Image (cartoon, rainbow, N blue to C red):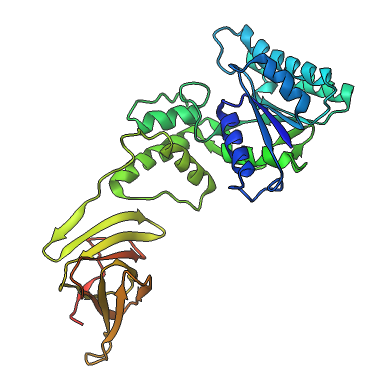
Length: 383
């Protein structure tokens, strides 16, 4: 299948082309077109116009993602959004190529402004072309699209806010109560790739991305500032919420390239160290514990708090004793970085961990609740 993507260097185009190449190389296998031999024709504003003739003659499917969003002169809206679409369709007609053609329009096509009028004209051009030639056309009226590789300070408030907050720059929010309808770029790409197999989604005459997120601008900004603060309080956003998960992935893509790393607070003493890595209100806390050779740490028990231990380096033993009886049998679990094994730390058992090796013993610890110094639920008792 020969696929032509116009606007290939734009926001949606770049994301689409990258995934098509993943399918082409066999790296992405979860698509209906996986296994097909693909050839991808990439065309953009700086391409040789002669290439368009070659591509239109040989294309089996066209994604027309070329367009103008922020021109210097408003007259360029019609030239960029309607004019190029006309050239594209005329070139296809010249070679008698009736392959399916997709066009990216906008929800703003319903508005009476120069941008909306140009998008509406492009839509009608497509519908007329379908009526004239019998070609299948797919007209997508996208709402606001967000995701990685979107240019800030251009036409996306989400991209601008992600960029500015990640880089410590001020933002301007005129009305936090404005309700936004957004689609995530990966959902857009999946929908477009599905259309290659005739699996596109419709609402009336228009094609749509089925997953749309509705949220106020103020709520988006609050989330973004919480993402920034998460590096200070070790929190992780609620990944159970689909929009939060997608926005967090988007936000991280705007981090300054010299700030991918951030420090943690190590609690160090002669026995080793204990460092919190992640805190979540609903999934507990994740930490790393380092024990020096010959050292015993722990010697305590909990009423409700429970933990999971995973030793990833060194060797040692984790001991337990049931608190219901002072002379209960001491249970021993030998652990090693050579054998990945999770040890549950049940409530009501005093426990410790001893390094039996001659190197530091490193153990990852998950706890079902974040440490609260006012209510630690931790009681000293030797095993």
